[in-house]
Length: 246
Image (tube, rainbow, N blue to C red; front, side):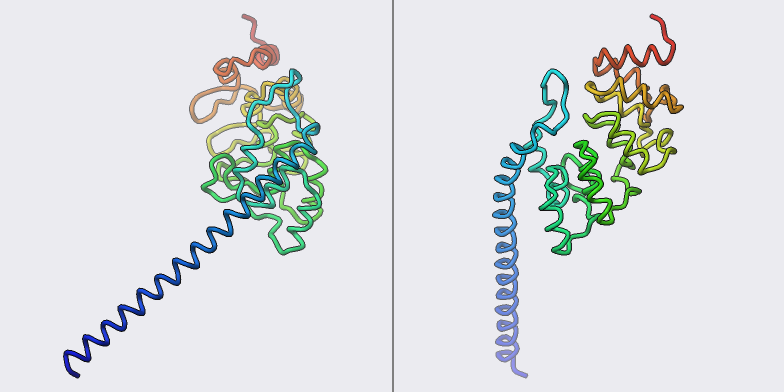
């Protein structure tokens, strides 16, 4: 074979390779554009849906909302998780009928809630009806997120009532009362972060034999964490339950 023929063949291969790369880039761009348009539509949907369910979202008695809920929900990439946190039963059923996995998790790189399932999202907003819908559809209550948080851990740390915490414990099992996540946080420790329903949760856990003095892996106890946060009602409740007089 002559050098000219080899050169021509090499040139042809190079051209074909470039064409393949261009095709792949076009496909990737097309998918990205499609995802972006879907996200934009989802943003409108989030705003509209929040207006419908706002009165059901649990927050502090003084009306303060401790986080930008709308922006947080928009950060979700899993549409089923998003629908669960918005308590949109019709959309949940539509997504499931379309073949979406009931236990599909939120991508690992999502900033706020890593590896959350739709059921975890429902517990986070305190929607027992949504949780029941997901359970009836086959949701697994035994799954944990990447930090080892069970449904009970999520309920303990979220701004939801002790009734939701009780419901979550029933799903996980009573052993959850003493269970630690991967960074050594117990339910009592996580409940201390809730400055709305924390006292009720702490009393609920104490009545069921929870040790309120177990430190996390960083050395913080529920009481020292409450002091760090400045949650006065949680501090007073913990001191009372621990028998500390100062």
